[in-house]
Length: 95
Image (cartoon, rainbow, N blue to C red; front, side, top):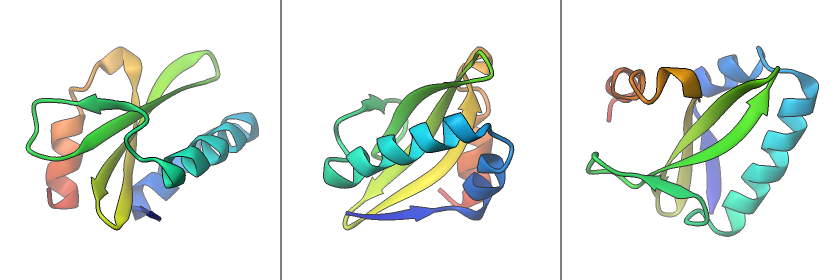
């Protein structure tokens, strides 16, 4: 699988700590091997999945979309906002 991060995701990545970034790199390497290993997000007609992680004691989620042979890394959501921002991000990204 080929990972394709969005520009928005890369901008969000700049705001994270170095420790969180290294953890994300490891988790994305696992996604490259098997993109279906993480929990799927239902309620959308897309193959959306999430990766859990913490940064500065805040729960966050990386949202990615599987469109073979690509895995599009879409965005990072704060867990405390649930998934309220997801629909807005998907619309902005054209999904």
